[in-house]
Image 1 (cartoon, rainbow over the protein chains, first blue to last red):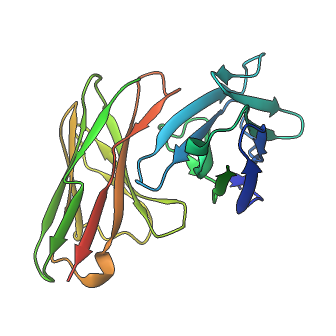
Image 2 (image 1 turned 180 degrees about the vertical axis):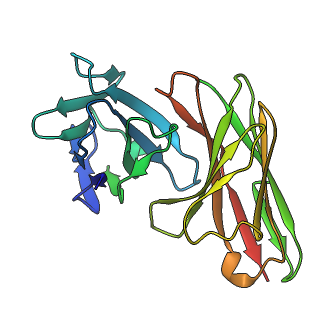
Length: 115
Length: 115
């Protein structure tokens, strides 16, 4: 079965520190995509970063990077130099092959940045 | 990045009435859009896939006669909650993938309260 697992329901991190949010996935598809989204208290889902299964390099977008370890089936999100505005729910998602763009979602991690 | 709008952002209606929620892709065409429901502190639950020019595909357990979906054009999908009841109160959010599928953008969500 295809599945996304986020094992950290909540995390507290000191401002300016780096933070790693864990995500593991389960699929037998040879091709898939991995996404991370941020959901602040306002409710909007903000697209952060995408990693394709065949991408050779880890995706990066500003302070966000995705630590893609294909053999371990993990796609952890790394946020460098955390800011108070990073406090939010973070969701990892996977787009399986031939899914018509449907995403499979993890349960989310609530990140709180402490001043 | 691409923008998806959703209207209204909040709606309060009386039990038994119907509510229409609009989802628009503002600067790209979306032949597919997704409708989700999100309960407090939970992940997204896919309700249905909206397909331009054809019938929506509903997830198991979602009543198609209660949650009517119409994908009228390449930029507009609507979700109508018919004969709403208090248990339909929730946060509804739509998303639209870009043609590559490597990005999927979300509307800001609609908070529905049925009294």
